[in-house]
Image 1 (spheres, rainbow, N blue to C red):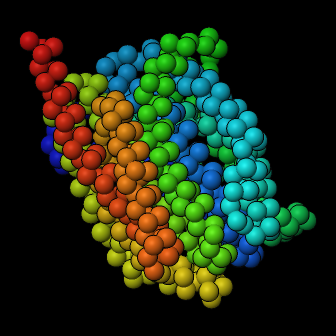
Image 2: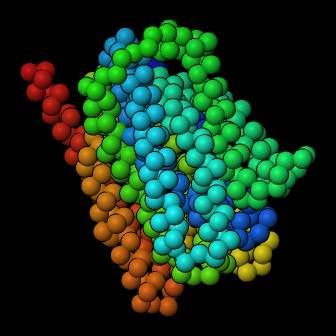
Image 3: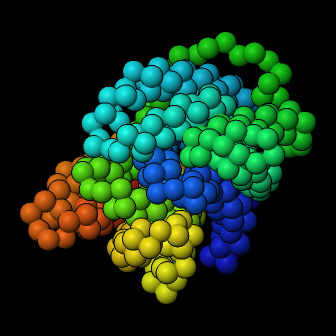
Length: 455
């Protein structure tokens, strides 16, 4: 990354960083997208089972991997402040944290999986598919979390095109193994939706091994010599990572887990409703990768500028990022409205599921506008290393406001399942308003602190 002057240069550098991140995020989410979509072409039970398994896994993964996102602002600020020698040490500590977190997830999953699925009034076949899908996917948890750290290191240096390259290499692997294991082609067992879990686990191993190879062999990563020395565990460094990462992770968890909570509550509806809800939500989540990518790009560029104490440039990047997100969200909203028939047909051929999915997609339009504001601002705040208030806002917006509104509307009005979606929209809007206020406060505080230190 380089210092920029004016919005034109910033826009150019921002796109250079953003576009590869966007391709990477779409690619990573495409694994889940193809899992759900391809399983839906086996049966409604496979679609519902994989979708429910994914809805339980995604908030766990995004929340805990959010902890590891701390490596991105740490690396970006170290580079901005010319402290490159500290980078390999912090990356290795991040890898140690990722392994610890992975083992913890597997243990907790082993203990709680039957309980969680048992609390849902699922058809026995849907229950079986969801459980076995998650077990299959668990074989790739350790490499996935390690990859999250390596990717944060790569992105923190501003080389987001490398992450894009890794994802583009791995995506065909996921699709191929989905095809082989879901449908039982070329002598492989026909596992249905469960096969998608094994295919995804294999893909997680691939992207991790590719990342290690690139960091060891390719310039400019070789200069950091990340794997040349086995660093001793530093709990002081763990504390620094967790101090930034835990609020990030929990904020993401509160946002993503609200969708899982809604899925749990909707388990009282029939299989058609569950499948339709999950198909529409899966597509809305796919589109969410755009504001999320803008958020991640803002963390990098703002972290770099804050590390170099160029606060005016950091503020200009935040304005630029939110503007780009809002513009794109308007385009996406129009796309969903105009092509909802075609989108629904991607997931299923079942007439009942198809009709209901189209109705859910109308509500997904309103997700786009709130996400376009909230997600980029979260990324900007992470660039300033301001994460604790975001955590509290996420908890209040989604769990104190959004979920209760959804429960009331779904239970006491004729909206039924759609009431939960309105609750989600209200929660997302509340989060967007709160985060906007927080960013203005933080920018003012940082500016005043810098003036005091200079005087």
